[in-house]
Image 1: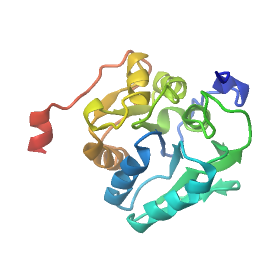
Image 2 (image 1 turned 90 degrees about the vertical axis):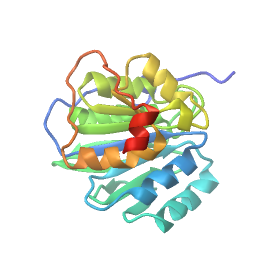
Image 3 (image 1 turned 30 degrees about the vertical axis):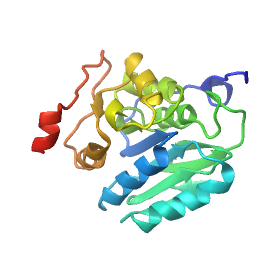
Image 4 (image 1 turned 180 degrees about the vertical axis):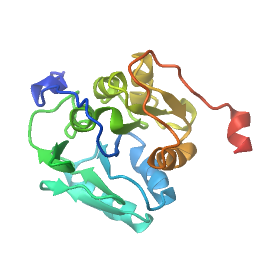
Length: 231
């Protein structure tokens, strides 16, 4: 079996403790292309920058970006070079490199990083989430979607512990309830939502209708079927 590398192997942990602009990070794997398509099709303009890791072969990441762009009001780009992040834009890791977020001069950047696989993946959700915690910390919103394995749980726990708002897709709407389940099990998740509620939660975050949480044990918020039907 392939050796499993920790995020420490490619990116030091240096949590941000400053107040900075909002940043959204999303990680997904099996079933994630459809989940992302649904979310981005429902997002309006007026959002902070979004950075995405989807486990996908290198040859298919550009086509994923094109597909998402076809149904989205915001502009979506593949990260192939260091890029300054802009509002109303999303940035997707290419299929053969990690993507790392940094903050320089008060501005966010996304850069490809060619390094070993982390949590058995490149791009790795753990690397993205670790970098988001280093760059944005409590100011970030992190979302983990459907996928096999446990990539993302380490970085999401770091974000949660630093006060970021964290969301996991619920089991019923996941194709594979692996990555969200692992993040929930280690106490890294603030709220569990069905896929159809996630776009609205992103809007809530952008408009200050949800807040960062501070360091404490998670008090999971879930929505019942009755609540979902009444919305």
